[in-house]
Each structure stands twice: as structure tokens, then as C-alpha cells.
Image 1 (tube, rainbow, N blue to C red):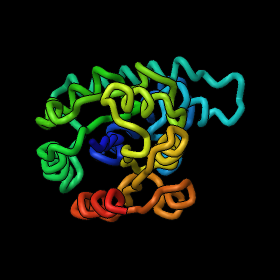
Image 2 (cartoon, one colour; image 1 turned 45 degrees about the vertical axis):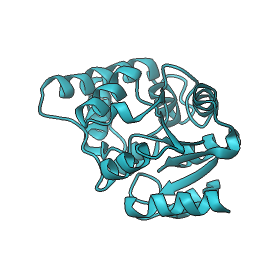
Image 3 (tube, helix red, strand yellow; image 1 turned 120 degrees about the horizontal axis):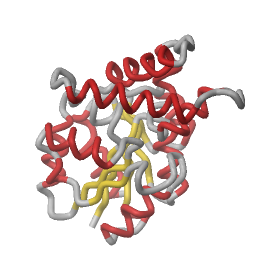
Length: 221
């Protein structure tokens, strides 16, 4: 049996608009100038506390906890409005469906989102039933710590040698490597292809149509 663990933001979901809007709100609530969009997206994948700690740049007075709470409030308000839901990237639903129908594959999620948030968005896109294990920032330390991958492997009963993490950031790749799993990078997310390769991705794909053939190639070798 093979375990494929997907990241969410930047891999399955094109959530950059909601992330940047919520982060801008958090900074403005503290009368702080928000970072450039590229800087905001550079910390996607980390838990909120780790993301804002990273953005603090060693400033001990930086209101990390309060910024994280304001971000949660803004994100929740967007969801509650009924006008905002992160769209899937092209090909994501079809690829996940194809993999879920295979009898040699188990699917999982490892994300910096909360359990409530990820289950809500996966349910919205009719994908929730495809995933046998869902690990989030509620369950383990923030990426790149390997805790989410290790817990997913244990729950699925799959060894690291039969596990592949699919993600768009260096945090996903480092998490996979630290757990002893393989990693496939995706080029449509928030970190550049060369950074994913440098972090240890076996390969970086340009679209979802390439994923299943690439996984079969990895497993056959």
C-alpha cells in the first residue's frame, strides 16, 4: 500500500487571495504596515504562530499571538459571508479522485490549517471522503517538523519508504524528508521550483496531469 499526503494551501487550494486579505487585516488591526504579498505567501504552510514568528524577524515586541487571532477572525468572517471559499487548482479534483479509486493507494492531508478549516473546505469541494487521514496544526507541531507525516503514516499503517508528500513549499519538502518519506514539489504554489528542488524534492511537476505518471515512475524505481 502507498500513502500520498497532500498539502492544502498552494497545492490543492488556490487560497492566496484569502490568506493575503486576512493577513492584511491582522496587520491593519495593529496599525502595522503589512508585508509585501510575496513575503506573506512565503510563510504559507506554517502554523499561524510560526508564520507570524517568522515574519517578526527576531522582534521580541512583535504581537505574534494577537496577529494570529486577528487573522483567524478575518478568515472566519470571509468564510461566514458565504462569498469566499478557496478554489481548487485545475486538475486537483480529477487527480485526487483517480488516486482514491486505486486499491493500492491511501490518501492523506498534512496542512497548517485547522481541522475545522480543512474539513470545511474539503467537504465544500466533495473531496473529504477521499482522505483516510487528515493531520493539521491542531494535531502536531508546525511544518517542517515531521510530526504530521509520521502520525499519518502510523494511522494509515504505511511505512516511510511507501509514502510521498505532495507540496508547494520548502516546508512540505523538509517535513517529508525529516519523516523519511519522498517528496514531489508542485510549481503552481507559493515557493519557486528551484527552491523546492534545493530542499530535496525528487521532482517538481508543472500540472496535475503529471502527478499520477510521476508517482508510478517513483514507485516502479
